[in-house]
Image (cartoon, rainbow, N blue to C red; front, side, top):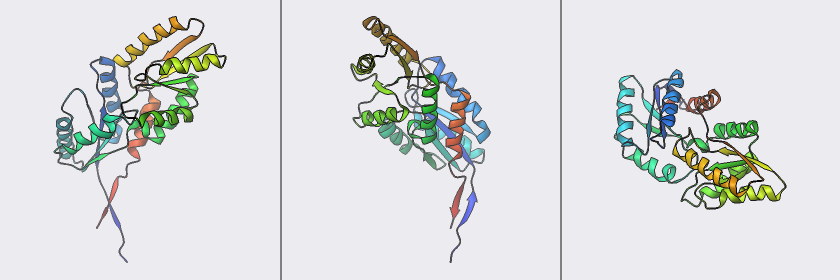
Length: 240
C-alpha cells in the first residue's frame, strides 16, 4: 500500500481590499500587513485603484525570489457581491504568476471572522448592522442570515429605505434609541455617506436617538483573526 508523504512548503500572503482615495484605509492596510509579517512575506493590493494582476504578479515574483512556493490570497471583502464572485476570480485568472495562487473565501464568509463579528457587535451593544449592499440578489438573504446570527436587524445602504425600516421597526417595538454597527472596513467615503444619512434620519426621527460605530478598525483582535485564517492554510502538500 502506498504511503502518502508530505513536503513542507513556504507560502507568501497577499491581501486584497476594495481601495479608497482616503488615507485611512490605505494606512490600515499597510498596518495590517506589517503586523502579519510574523507569518512570512505579506503584501497587499486593491481592486479599484491599480491593475491588480500586475500587482499580484510583481508580488509573486518577489515571493519566489524569497523562496516562497505558493501565494495565498485573502480578499478583505465583507459581502459576496460582484467583486468577490466575478471581479476577483477574473483578475486572478488573468495574472501571469510565477507561483501557484490560492484564493481563500472572502473575509465576511470566514467562520473565525463571523465569530469575531458577533462578539464585537455584542461588546458594542449594537442593534442594527449596516452594510453597503450589492446588485447581486443573493447578497440580501446572505446578509439577513448573518444579522440573525449576530442578533441584530439588517440594513443596507444601497437599498432605499432599508435603514429607515430598521429604525421604524425598533420604534414600533418601543425602543427610544438604536446603535448602528457599520459593516465596513477602515472608513473612507462610505462612512462619510453614512454620517450624512444619519444626520438626516435624526431630524426625521427626533425622538429616537441614533448612534454609530462607523467602521471595523484594524485592532489587535481583528489582526489575530486574520492571522488565524491564514495560519489555517496547510503548510504541506502531498508528494507522489
